[in-house]
Amino acid sequence: MTVFLVGFALRGDHRGVAAVEAALGGAGVIASIVWARLAWAHWSWSVFDDALELRHGVVSRSASLVPFHRIQQIDLHRDPIERALGLSTLVLRTAAATSDAKLPGIDAEHAEGLRRRLLARAGLDDAV
Image 1 (cartoon, rainbow, N blue to C red):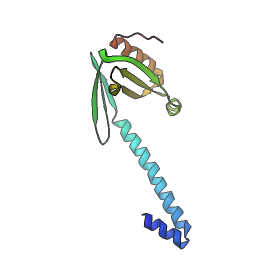
Image 2: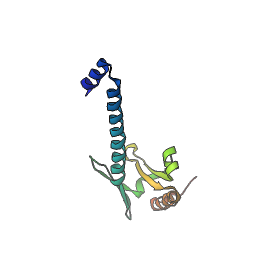
Image 3: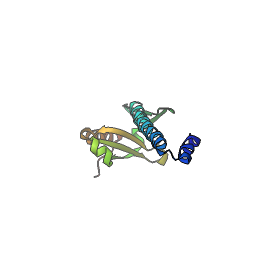
Image 4: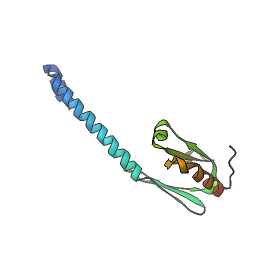
């Protein structure tokens, strides 16, 4: 592909290079949208009596179980894109730095209620 683009540039035919760049850019945008939708579709979580189970991944699937007694803190995070879409991310913090978990894409209106229910299951109060 690079040889093709360099060949166009050396001939001075920049319309062809622009067309190829536009096609590659469009393909990149479409691929990004498809990947985001796949990643979203493959996120799931379940609440059990004593733990929270998280499953995610498109190519590499991952499953983790976070026992409620290990949770020390639950934070709400909303970046600019999440705010624009009306979403939040719950971040569950445990004693081990590698076992922190995230619940992305929670409806902002329900995120605080879910956070409080998970805190109650973990036996923690909201110190905020």
